[in-house]
Every structure is written in C-alpha cells, then in structure tokens.
Amino acid sequence: MCGIVGYIGHRNAYPVVIKGLKRLEYRGYDSAGVALLNGGLKVHKKKGKVADLEEATLGKNLDGNVGIGHTRWATHGEPSDRNSHPHVSNNGELAMIHNGIIENYASIKQELINNGYQFHSDTDTEVLLNFIEDIKINNQCTLEEALRIALRRIVGAYCILLIDQNDPETIIAARKGSPLVIGIGKGEHFLASDASPIIEYTKEVVYVNDYEIAIVKADELILKNLGNEKQTPFITKLDMELAHIEKGGYDHFMLKEIFEQPQTIYDCLRGRLLPEHDEIVMRGIDNHIDSFLKASRIVMVGCGTSWHAALIAEYIFEELCRIPVEVEYASEFRYRNPVINEGDVIIAISQSGETADTLVALESAKEKGAFIFGVVNAVGSSIARLSHAGAYTHAGPEIGVASTKAFTGQLAALTMMALKIGYKKGTLNQERYTQLVRELYAVPEKVKEILTDTSHIKKIAEKYASASDFLFLGRGYNFPVALEGALKLKEISYIHAEGYPAAEMKHGPIALVEETLPVVFVATHDSYYEKIVSNVQEIKARKGKVIAVATEGDQQISHMADDVMFVPACDEIIAPLLSVIPLQLLSYYAGVAKELDVDKPRNLAKSVTVE
Ligand code: M6R
Image (cartoon, rainbow, N blue to C red; front, side, top):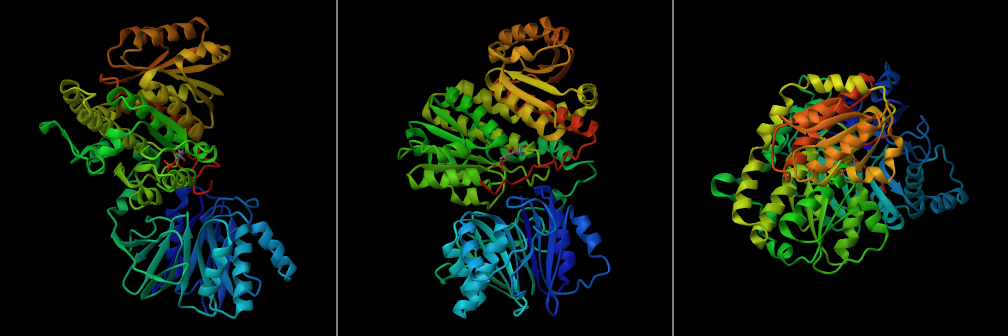
C-alpha cells in the first residue's frame, strides 16, 4: 500500500526521501513522487518505480531541506503520472501526500467545483487538499487550523503530510487509521509509514496516534489532538537493525526470511518457553489469565496468511483448552453485525498490525465490550496499541510481500498461548504439557534441518512451474497448511491453486484431477495419516501427479507419490510449523523459475491499509 516519507532538517531532503521510498517499495506501489521546498514548491512524480522517478529528475534542481515523498498504490484513479502524489492545491501553494481513503470525497469535490475549483487528477487526495486550501482562504486561518477543520468533516482513513511554500520550516502531518512514525534526530525529523526508512538515521521514534496532528520543524515536534490540545509525544526506542531490512547476500527477501525461521521461531520462544522449568512465561496471558479461563468462546480474526494461522490455532485451542473457537475473516466479521458478548475474547492476528480490515473489526468488537488480545509482529503498530493485551511474534521486519517467517512466528506464539491456558485450566495434563513444551522447543533445530539442503525442492518446483493449476490437500492440523501452501503459490508464481481439506476432494474438486494436475498432499505422520493415504490413492487412481510433504522415513508415501519433500518427525500439534516450510520454498522456487518478482508480486501490497 502507499508509502509515505518526509524529511526536515539540515540535510538535503531529496536523497533521504528517495532512499526512504526505496525502503518502502516492499509495500507494493505503482507510482512515486516527491515535493521539495526550495525557494518555492517543486514537485516531481512518475508512474512506475522509484528508479523511474529518479531518472525523470536527472539534471533537475533538487535542493531543499524539506521534502515529502510518496509511493502510490492506486485506489481512486488508474496508476498514472497525474494521479501520483504529491498533489498541489489550486493556488499552487500547498502540496500533500496521503495514504488511505476519503470516503465522502465526492460530495466535498462537488462543493469545491461549485466554488470554482478545478481538479487535475481522479484522486480523493486532491479533493482533501483543496478542501484544506478552501477552508484556509475562507476562514483566513493558519494551515494547521484549516487542516483541523477539514479533518473533522471527512470520513475515512488517512495519513497525510502537508507542506506550504509560504512556511518552508514546517511539515504538518496527521493520521487516522493509517500508520505514521516520526524519527527524532539532532536538529532533524524523519517521517514515514513505518520505521524502515528511519532506522539508519535514528532509533528514537514517536508513533503518532489516530486523530493527532504533528507540527514538525527541524528542531521541534508538537503533537496536538483535533481539539487543538497539546499531547505529549511518547518516544520509543526501535529494537531493529539496518541489517534486518537488507537482503544480506540472499537473492530475495523472501528467501532470506524463509531461511531466518530457525532464528525467528527461537526468538519468539526465547524467554517465554522454559523447558528446564516446564514453564511458559507470557506476560500478556499471565496478566489476563482470568479472561481466558472464563471465556465461553474465543473469536480469532485475521486476513490472508494470518487467517490461516488462526485456523490452525482453532484446532490447537479446542484440543488443549476445550474452549470453543470461531475463526473469522476480519472483513466479514466487521460488516455482518456479529454477536459479541461482554467477556468474549477476541484474538487478532496480524503481521503488520496495520491491516485495515482487522483494525476496524477490532474497534467495533472493543466498543461492544470484548477483550482484545493481539498477536502481532510489528512492534508499536495500530493493532498492538488497540489491543488490551498481546504477544509479539518477534519475527523481525518482514519485507517480502509473501508472509513466511511471520506465519511461523504466529504459530509459535499461538501454540505457546494454548499450552499455557490449557495447562492452567486443567484441560491439558502435566505429562502431555511437558511433552509439548519440549516438542515446541525442538522446532528451530528441526526447521534448520529442513533448510540444510533445499535443492530437491527447487527441482520439484522447476518440474511443475509450468502447470496452470495446483490442488493442495491436508487434514486436521495440516488442512490450513494446505490453504497456506495454495495462497503462497498463487501470490508468488501466479499459478492458480486451491486448498481443501483432503476429504472434501470427493465432494467436487476431484473432477479436476487429470494427468497434468499436480496435487500437493500435506501428509505428515498424525492421527489422520491412514485417511490421507487413501486420499493419495484416489488421486493416483485418476492419474494425478502427487507431490507430498511427508515425515522423514515414510516409505508408504514415498512409494505412492511422484515427488516427496520430507520434514522431521514431530507431534501433530507442532506439525504445521514444519510442514509449511517446504511449501514456502516450493512457491518461492516456482516464482523464481518463472522469473517473477517474488518479493513484490503484481497487485499485492505488504500492508493492506485500506478496507
Ligand atoms: O499484516 P497482516 O498479517 O494483517 O496481513 C494479512 C494479509 O494481508 C497477509 O497475510 C497476506 O495474505 C500476505 N500477502 C500473505 O502472504
């Protein structure tokens, strides 16, 4: 989704802004632009990549210590130079960039047209900008005051940066529902949609809250609410290194992130899972254990890969804690007026912590009295802050658009939570608890084993990369893993893929099976094993090609399948943490074989900040 960068201070703003936009490229975008204050307002924008913008600005005067830049992911109006941000107001004095959607822009636009305004783009952003200008002129007020009035009138979500050629010492920013981080330097400030453009300059940041306006000067940061009352900026220290957001010798971020998993899963367990004491320490759970013990149901909400993590957690929580769990797509949950009772526990799962659908679902559940527990990767993100309590997944920044290490981080955190709650509740006996604590502790080493040699997975991917469709099948804990495998393959290789519970195959999808259809079975040794072996036979009988994820040493599956990817033996509750790894690699190598941009697949955004 759109990326926002701003700089004000003693440096030349243009290189800082351009570098920042490149750091945000992973979010997905289709055009880019910058505005600089340099004895007047200079705006450059271009459809395409940041590199295209750089090329278009070669030889131009790019001086100036104040700059704002934007990567746009089109919502209102096609990707084009004219729809790119920054937009300039009708009198040519103001420039603005915006991430989000102004829902009531059409009526405001009509009002402005009636007042003689002209529009040069199809965007809602240009409407908001001219609305601010109109208020400023009519009320003869400051830009800050005009912005405040405008924001009270608009409906929707925004993170905006605004500059005025008459005030070359200020950037004004505001947010509601779309993230904004401000980095505090010495005599300089950095503004961005997330911390990645800021980290190389400073580790001290302020996360701006919804309904706050920031007045940012080189050596001053003032935060106010929409009622013009000053707010105290809360400075947070970033726990992130530059190396975390660079490729470190790997061809792609996705590959780097897949290979980081032994470490990231370990980081998630570290200090929490203490096998030597048979203990799990999770402060978010410890402090709110009664909410979980008394819960008559748990509702888990998320989108995409995070929704798949919730599906696996549903099986684990019901088995270990005997609490009914419902798993909801955040977007559907929000809009179908769900029944939420006081005392319900909502577990929100999100890598970015900024997914608009999840955020909005939580806001309404919170209003209805639910207890919100966030399982989030991005520290300080909106969902983390909205939750009553939570557990960070500690996977570190995930740059590849396809979620990999964040998914296994979610599974590790959710499994620990279920173990802890089940044990406290008495639905999980000591012996099984101890066994599962040890099994979970062994996961990083087992993932390392899978990653020791991935050349056979690469060969399998290359063999099937020209297929037009794939089926992914699994049962029990491995059924959501099949869904995740299908999603990964679609995202990265653009091959159409469907995931199903293996038994559902007979109720329809089996009609698709023929010699050219690869069917991936997630068939590790578990209590569903015999059943899934029968399903494999059903596919083989119809000449489908079977690729299996199986437990090391499994001769039976090896003989039946055309290709096998092995994972180490483990308890079935832990299995998804291992069985998903070969599927991540399968889709990665298929995408590479098709020479696709695996880190930035077409049409996708890393952080989906619009509903
Ligand atoms: O940041 P979130 O976990 O809330 O994101 C949810 C989905 O948008 C995300 O998982 C998406 O499906 C990924 N592209 C999956 O690889």
